[in-house]
Structure formats: C-alpha cells, structure tokens
View 1 (cartoon, rainbow, N blue to C red):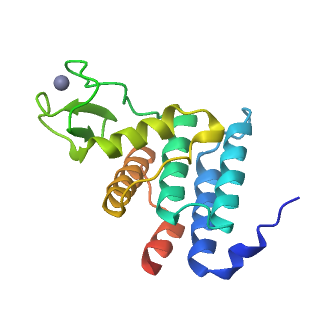
View 2: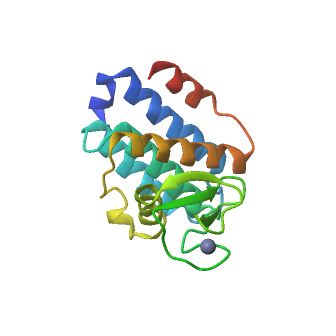
Amino acid sequence: MEVFFSLRDSIEKISLAQYFCELCSFLAPEEDNAEEILKLMLNSLYLLSNNKSTQTIIKSVFELRLMSLIGYMPSLVACDTCGEFESDTMFFNIQTGKLYCSTCATNGYETGIGVITAMRHICYAEPKKIFNFSLPEDGEKVLSYITETYLIQLTGRKYKTLDFYRGLI
Ligand SMILES: [Zn+2]
C-alpha cells in the first residue's frame, strides 16, 4: 500500500531502512503475532521517508522499542538499588539493562537525565507516541550509542547493514 518512494532520495535513508529489515528478519518472532513490530517498522519508514524526525532518533526508537517488544525491555523505572526515580546524572548498565542513580552507581554508562527520560518514553509510551520527543544533538548521540550497544550486546551478533550505515554517516 505504501512504497516509501522518497527513501530512494538518500543512500543513508535506504541503508537505515535495510538495517531495520535485517533486525526484523533476525529478531521478529516467526510464529507469534508480530503486529506491533510491523507497526513499528511502518511508522519508522514513514518518518524516515518524510524527514519527520532525525535519523538518529528514528534509529534509536526502532532499536530500543524492538528490543522491548521481543522481551528485552531494560529496567528503567528507577535506580535498581535504592528506587530513586531520578538524579541529574544516572548510570545505565548496558550489559544488564539496569539503571542506577549517582549515589548507588558502581558501574554503567554515565548519562544525563534527559537521555534516560527519552529511553523511558521509548519503552513505556503508547505506540503512537513513541517518536514524540526531542533531544539536543549531543543527547541524541548518547542515546544512539546506548540503544545500539544494548541491542548488539543482548542479541549477540553484528549487523552488516549497520556497519554499512555507520560507514556512511
Ligand atoms: Zn540509587
């Protein structure tokens, strides 16, 4: 029904779309209902095709929401040790998917609360709203690093289409 013709405008956009396809072909369940994943794919391609959000945000939302849908949702509600909802700086353990406040952290990737708020939004918002947020450019980069590394770590493999996309940007 929708051919996403304008993806052809840009090799970057086509490459990112191919990465989304590779992720789905490897990670989407073959027999269970994959309707939510299909919707995520179609919405991501639509936004990418029409420049409705930045490529970095679309990529991060796709990665983290897909991980959540297939059973790898990180534990972002509060600090895993003390239950603190937020501190200015928080620490996300990319291997375990657990979050720590600045007082309790003994490990994890240090990030500002803005990126954590974005990650919570991606995981917990209703499907139609998951792309409705923005971050400053440096925040987008941190978010992208976290979602990509988390996906690669937990799925335990590399993606050729991601390497190709990374070679372009
Ligand atoms: Zn804590």
